[in-house]
Length: 339
Ligand code: NCD
Ligand code: ZN
Image (cartoon, rainbow, N blue to C red; front, side, top):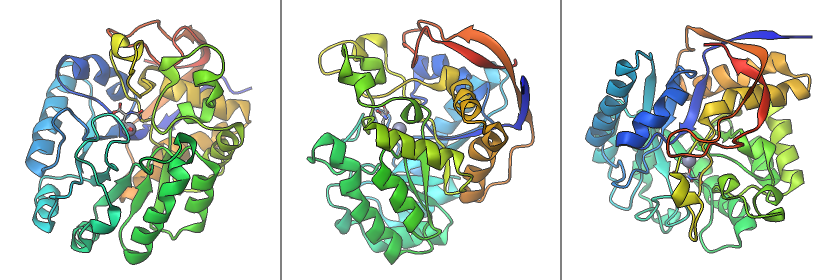
């Protein structure tokens, strides 16, 4: 029986760190475990230019240096109807790694997103591909029935991927069997992140019994067949699938209310829950590729140098982390990252 596991420091290829007090509250949960994370741009004032991404990166780095946590935040900017090739070049020169496509209105702070993906200037995609920047897509078709939104958006991704074979595209937080099949079928320029929560829950964990707002996120968790397809993909050893937690903290009162915010705060136990999943499938030897290798390779980054140690030791996910209720609060887990 394996009771201790050392893996290369992982990368979280999709995280929400927020700003100000909330950022300082949540960032240690990510920076204490992950070597790098791709930080999403959906702040209240969205990050749409390289200069604001660089400022945001500095804010995160300052917080991490006060905590003495070595951490390399990889930055993103949000694609808008006003994004030009110059904006892309400027972002590239500020070290921005990826550009995020949010369809209008589908999730937290996504107003000012893209209404019609056909209207995006192809030169913007060409400039991204030219500079080696990645397109991250929140693949949900606004207005469709919620369980069909991801499947309904894949045709847009297919169009972009086919027209721009040199542009690397990540379908973020895939949630459906259709999404998994699409990524398998698509060219080598298309990959996907998978979250921890979508490997664990279905729609029933949100609304099947009493309403659980802490399991509510976008895209919404779907059917058991979808969850099973995600688990198979994550365990498959196919480098097109890698970890992006989509850890998305919201203060407790903005989740436990009418019109509650979407997002699961998974960072406090992401690696531990994932280790449990891989362990339950006898797949621990494949964990490191999913967490620490495939994402970096797709992004063309070197691998992290350090390691983390995960030990078989029970603990309980806390009821709260500051103002935020973490995903699966109170759950006993069998694995723990050694500090
Ligand atoms: C994210 C957030 O809160 O910023 N919410 C979520 O449900 N996943 C935004 C996102 O990634 O869609
Ligand atoms: Zn997200």
